[in-house]
Length: 344
Image (tube, rainbow, N blue to C red; front, side, top):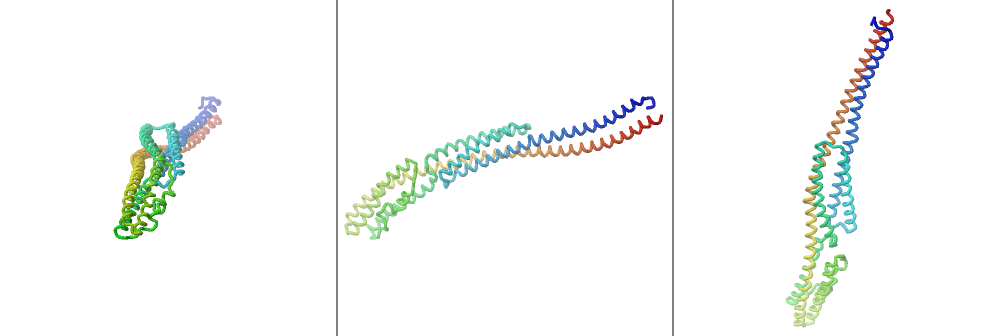
């Protein structure tokens, strides 16, 4: 120091202080860079990934909900149209959210699970397309609750068997026919026909064709009763034979109607089994994969947050150490320079 010129001593001292400042600044920049990487990983990749995966899962839930609602025979045609529109809309949203997720950076494990989910999604879409085709076929028939129709028709058929029995008991045991037996509009079928509406041409045609034998059946019951009460038992028996022939004709229509309704019911059962079986199984498998992807992103986000917190602690420690060491070096250097300058 004694042999150095004053200018060299001053410049050297300031350069050392500047170097200390640079070192502390570099430490801060490195720490800021680590924090920026962590923020980008969490905010730009992981949070959007979790959101897209969540939206994809929500879409699959809504898709299944609309599908399950369409399985109910209590849902009227207008509501079915709304549920079906929701089903198509949500199905499109599902693919939009999933494609948005695929555009984000991903780890190797995420890529593997994404490919697995796409395979599951394809299988699910295949059975959903099958379900959609059967549902359209079912809705075109126009009988939304075939089970209820089968139950009603079987009851109506039983009612007419009962009237046959009542007529036979009148002829053989002198029993009285129920009130209104001769009125085709007074029986359960007659009252039901007044309120029942259908756009299905096959069903409407069968019901229309059944009107004549059904009405004749009831009218004959009244004629038989009148002849029997008038003491014309032979005439009553002849009319009874005619009534039995007309009954067979009417009951044939009942059998056709029940067979038709049972075919529709079988179609609805097939749709229900498809929705509650293969579709549900594939949906559950896809959900499991989505949950794995969500868990990976949540885990990575937690790791990045932990790493960022550790980086903050390390940077703060290095900055404090740098400040202390730098201050001490500056003081020591200042004292040395001062002595080197003032002492001579």
